[in-house]
Length: 236
Ligand code: ADP
Ligand code: MG
Image (cartoon, rainbow, N blue to C red; front, side, top):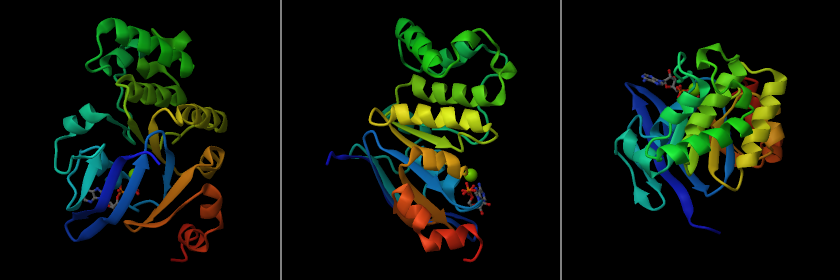
C-alpha cells in the first residue's frame, strides 16, 4: 500500500459544552474516493472544517504527506494541496464561468490556467457557458462550477460538502460520474445525503453519528449495517 496522503488522529472539536466531533481517526490514500454520511448535526461539516484548516481541532493531529498541519492557517492547507467546496455556494455571481475558474487558479501561470480552465469546462459540461455570468447558471451547473474551481489548483485532496444538494436526479447522476472519473487521480471525500448518489459511487463509506465514526466500510457493508440503519431511522 502507498503511504497515506492524509492522516487524522483523535480529531475532536468542542463548541462550548457541545462535542461536535469526537475522537475521529482517518487515513486517506492517494486517489481514494470516500463518502461521509450521517444525520444532520453529526459533525460532518465540522470535520471538513478541520481538514481544510478553517477551524482548529480542540484535540488531535492532522498530517498531510507526513507533514504536521495541526493548528496551521487555511492557506497552508490549500498550498499543500487540500481544496474544499463549502456547503453554501462560493462563486462570484457577476463573473463569467471562465473567470471564476481563472480566479481559482492560484499560482498557475496564465497560459496554464487558461488551458486548465478549458479542460475543466469540457469535463464539467460547461463549455457552452464559458462567458455566462455564474449567477445565471442553473443550480446544478453552479455546483459543477464550484467543483471546477476546487480542481483549478490541481489539489491532491478535494473535500466536497453536499455537492448534490438541490440537484435533479439527472444532475446527481452526472456528478457521480464526474467523481468516478477523478478516482485514482486525486483523493475525493464527499459528504452526502443522497443515498442514490452514494450507491452509484459504491465507494468506501464512513458514517458519522454524534461526532463519532460509527462505521467505515464498503457501501454494501454500510447498507447492511444494523447500527447505521438504526441511526438513520432515529432508533439510536
Ligand atoms: P453536519 O454537517 O453533520 O450537519 P455540523 O458539523 O455542521 O454537522 O454540526 C455539528 C454540531 O456542531 C451541531 O450540533 C452544530 O450545531 C454544532 N456547530 C457547528 N458549528 C458550530 C459553531 N461554529 N459554533 C457552535 N456550534 C457549532
Ligand atoms: Mg453539514
